[in-house]
Amino acid sequence: MNRTFNSKKLTARLRTTETGLVQFFDLPPDVVMDLPRLTLVGNSRLVVENHRGLLVYTRDSIRIKVSTGEITVDGVDLILRAIRPEALVVEGNITQITLAQGVNC
Image (cartoon, rainbow, N blue to C red; front, side, top):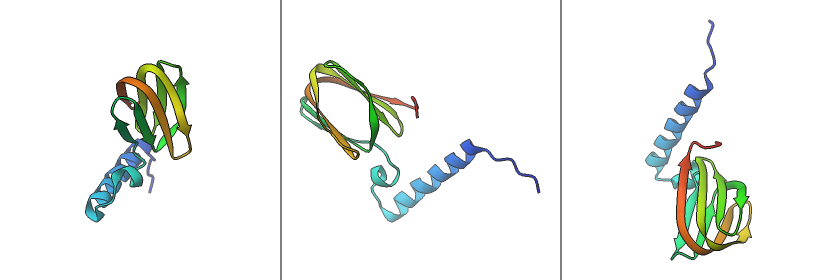
């Protein structure tokens, strides 16, 4: 029996199975599927959980790698208040948050 290995099909099939299990067992999808969780407090504090690292950091723009792509935070006087393996905290005057799916995954 000669079968070819198609990683994209396998990945899609695994993702479908994960989604089904999450729904069946009523599990939090961000934890089980390594999805990013963003918590915005007003326009001055953003907590990003399940990140995969920092890509760019300036006072007016921060780009963060996540499992689904990238998150860009734009604003004024942005600072990284904390960066840990499980979460990072951005503070400042946040004016825009952009989610780019599939970028550098």
